[in-house]
Image 1 (cartoon, rainbow, N blue to C red):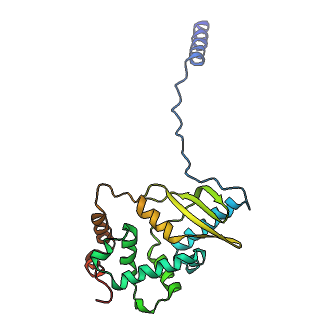
Image 2: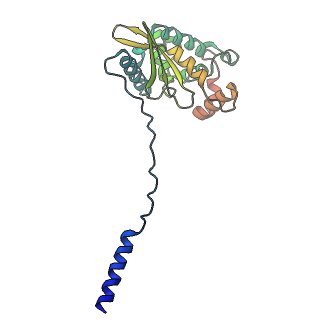
Image 3: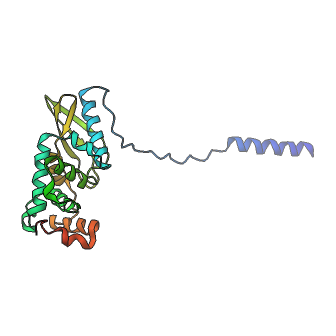
Length: 218
C-alpha cells in the first residue's frame, strides 16, 4: 500500500512540474509624450527653456510672460485692443478665429480699455489667452542666425509652429505669429469659423456672449 501511495505522489509531482505554464498576459506598452530636452546650454536648449517658461507664466497669468515677447507683439496687442473698443461683428469676422476669441476675452476686463498703453494691452491680451497655450514643451527646433522656429503640441490644434527672435540672453516669442498659427491649425470639427466662435463664446460666457459681441464704445 505504501509503495502505491508513494508512486501516486511521485506521478502527481512529475505531472505538475511538466505541465505547460499558462501564457503570460501581454504587457501594456506606455507611450511617452514627453519631449526630449535638448543638450543643456545649447542654443536649442535656450529656445526650449524660454518657451517653456513663457507657456508656464502665460498659463498662470504671471505678468512676466510679457517680458518674453518680441517688440512686435506689443503693437499686435494694441491693434487687438482697438478692435475690442471699436470693431463691430462684421469687422471682427475678417479676423482669424483665435484673434476674434481674444478680442471677446479682452472685453471681459473690468478696466476701461482706453487706459491701456501697449505694454498694458499685451498683458491684457496674454491674460485673455492663457487657456490657448497650456504649459508645454517645443520640439523640432531650428535656428537660423537670430531667428528660430519650433513645433508645439496644443490640444485642439494640429502641430503649431512657434517663431522666436534672439536678443542678448533670451529667445523672445513672436506672439502674433503664435496666435496666427493657432488660428491656422484650429480643429473646427466640421463647423464654420462663425459657428466655432459662437460655440466657444456660449461655452465660456453663456448669456453674456451677446454683450461681448458689442464694441466697448457702444
